[in-house]
Length: 481
Ligand code: PHE
View 1 (cartoon, rainbow, N blue to C red):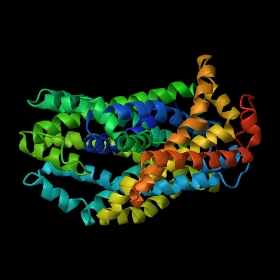
View 2 (tube, rainbow, N blue to C red):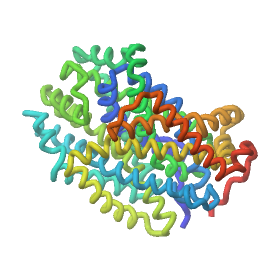
View 3 (cartoon, rainbow, N blue to C red):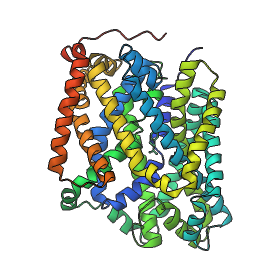
View 4 (cartoon, protein in one colour):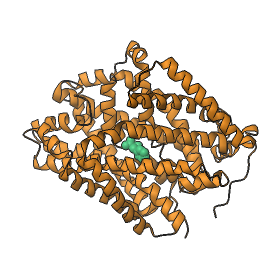
């Protein structure tokens, strides 16, 4: 059976932007920003996106297009049949199931709030309403609906489902966001939201860097969908050799612009409605903002539009998650897409139910667990591109990318093979220590990271001495069959 491909380049870019723009931008980002000091977080996050996120995204695109396969198979074939590297693909699948399990809970909330805004259900008391529906059978029902929508799009295929779907969803989302941000801008009190969002105090950044940095790194991986194979999978459907550096940068820039735009909606509204950045935490956009919509004349319509934006963003991301195991099963077992998709729907409904029925599990999965899993996966894919592919990675990076890419490629490879894995390793270690409840100073964490890094690089060097010693020869692209 011929493998699916995107119909158009813009189709691929929009689908990838659809994957990137999601709850991460509109739901997770505002409360992370509020919890990490407003503008101080924004600036660190923006730097991290471009220094860490973009090179990482490019590594994923390089691996995906090179292999034209699902992540597990990509690691197997590109490492010439290694048994260890496909385990990284297995980690991706596990991460994806965890991700979908909690993501669909929030996706379900957004659907619930579209209905509730319309009927005025949360009008009386948004706090109580949120508490009543966030976990339990109502949450489970809406989660199931959200997963069903996801499965329908994925079941229709790469071109007719994902590409067509995101081509409609992304423009709709941008138009709605722009409209609501204009509405927000003319409300009295909006200005304080902008001040909070954009004021950047260097002293706060420096003082809080050890805690801001891991949060920013986790968020960068989450928002760009790197660290669980989503971008590897999407890039595996690229048929032509167009420039990956250009496409990757376009995806990151669009994701950041839409993320910042979402902030221009959420922060002014929070200040207009509640006089502050909100209590923080997952309920922010569901409680504080709902209170505002309920108080306004025609606020219910605004509420419908606002929650529709979040639902669209969430859906275009969840399809990219579900597509990862779908592509694996189709590639590997030659079964029909629909059968596979609906089989997985049932599986995720079961694992997801644990999250919609149990708030504590949800909090753990959506917070520390997913950020540790994704950071670990991110490190793995960087090391793979940087040490196993190495010369092939450079060849793929520069393919169709013009002469400038030759220069950029070497710098990129240096970042991807050494600097970023060490940096992410540091970040991962800090979050693990945080979860275990051990607190050691950053000097200790850095030293341990370096020791582990040297051991890890020594191991990689022994496993793949040829690629390491000969980084610039350019082998042929492997056959697709
Ligand atoms: N990038 C998505 C968001 O910001 C989340 C996501 C992570 C999607 C990993 C796919 C893979 O909401």
